[in-house]
Length: 100
Image (cartoon, rainbow, N blue to C red; front, top):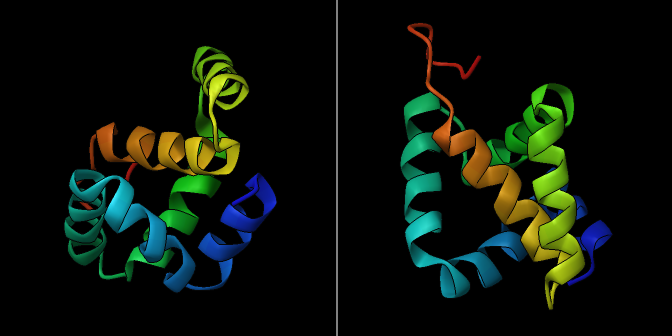
C-alpha cells in the first residue's frame, strides 16, 4: 500500500487497514482494538484520530522520527500509519477518555 492509500483506508473504513495490520502487527492491532473500544469508536475511527492527533499535536522530534521511518521503510504507507497509531497509543489518556 502507498501512503495515500493507507491514509485513505484509515479515513474511510477499517477493512483495508485490518487486512494488513492484523497480519503484520497483531500486537498493535490488539492494542488499537482495546484503545478504540475504551474510547467508544471502531478501529478505523481510532486510526483516523491517531492520524489527526499526530498531524495536529506531534512535536517536531516525532515528525523527524516519522520521516526517517518512512524514508527507510519498504512500505512507507504502513510505516506512517503504524507510527501514528503507536504514537497515539503511547499518549496518556485524560479522565474524559481522550488523549491530550
